Amino acid sequence: MGMHDMSRKSKAEYIKVRMQRYSEASPARKSRIIDEAMETTGFTRKYVINLLNGRIAYRGRKGRGKTFSDETRPVLAAIWNEAGCPCAPYFKAEIGRWVEEYEQYVANIGAEAKAAILAMSDSTMGRMLRGLPRIKPGFTKCNRNSGRNNPLKSAIPCHSGEEIMACHVPPGDVQVDTFALGGGDPGDNFFWILTATDRKTQWTVLSPTWNRGQYATLEALKRIERRFPFPITSLHADNGSEIINYHIAAFLGKNRPNLYLSRSRPRHCNDNAHVEEKNRSVGRELFGERRIDRPDLEADLIRLCEEWSDFCNFFRPKKMLIDKVKREDGKGFTCKYDKPRTPFQRLLDEHVLSKEDEQSLIEYRNSLHGIELRHRLVKRLKRIIHRQEEYSTAKKRHDRVYLESAAADSSLRDAPSGTSSACALQVGGIDL
Image 1 (cartoon, one colour):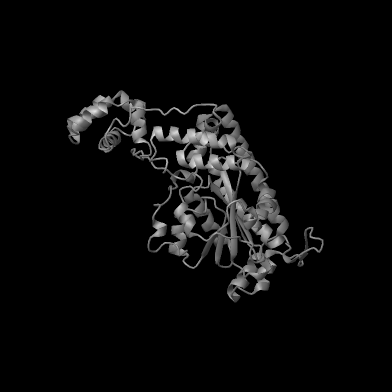
Image 2 (cartoon, helix red, strand yellow):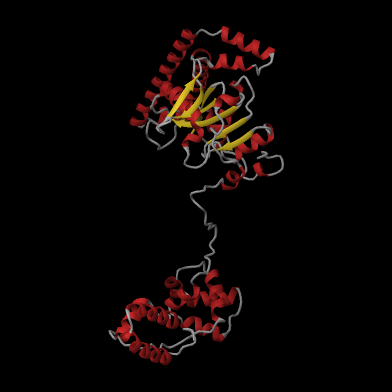
């Protein structure tokens, strides 16, 4: 006999019989009697032990039973939905008006159901409405951790960008990332720097972007692509929305259908290790940790990043990891590097450029002078810092005229916000 089939009187008689056996049983037998009583009556273990020890007496509560019929619940739920799904106490406070308006505008609920609903307490309403979904205008329950680009993220392969050593991949395997020029203060608006680096040749290009918006980041990505002397065949980024968004996906799907787009695994910063290192050794070396938030500095920042990228690609040698072996004692690795060469020299050694492109690149390199180029970009950086300090001082003084004039001279005011969130997944979108 199960617990649902036993009456209160049967449970009382069952406990009385088991109390005698329980007092005479061994410890092992007592445990089995307790388990059996729990399964039969449905009581908790502690309650059964107290009953069998005689500490308390079983008293079945009669209760008043079921008050409302099963047909009342769907009617109550319909009125509740029309009222906007309020919580039970607020719903009960205006139940008379809601019932009247429901009958006037929606449907007649009948005299019996109406009387039952009006007689309900707020506790009873809460029990009857428990578990029903709340339907509210504009209400959407979303996963805050996954963000709004979850369908797009699901379509983009997620893996480590360092699965194959850089010395074994052809040129064109590019990693991208951003770092902030916020000076440690994430508030308000400021510039970010988009960094792209090729793993094989270590060709690195920087470009500024305002607030990492979709349109601004795409424009920076276009500028970076134009500064690469060879085609980008794959693009690897982290899970940030500045790269993983529908605006960039739509552009790549329409204009770069053969480009392979991938992203890092969540919480694996080493999946994008090459560009993370360039953020420090190339980007932070130029800008440091200062804040740049003057809107009309965009053109100067673009030119500065181009000059600095040329200096790093043509005049600064780099090493490359060519072998990595675990030590016999298990502590760390033994790493082997090749001879230092500039990204320009590494690119020529790969022989991926046509003769015309290679000759054009050599002529461009010969037109540059490293010391003169460095002096020029340092002067440009000083002018940017000086104008930024004037802007920061005006902000402290609340000089509205100066601030508005700086914003009026910026091309960022005319930048569009982005594209539709569906265009990248339709026909003609990026082939992922």
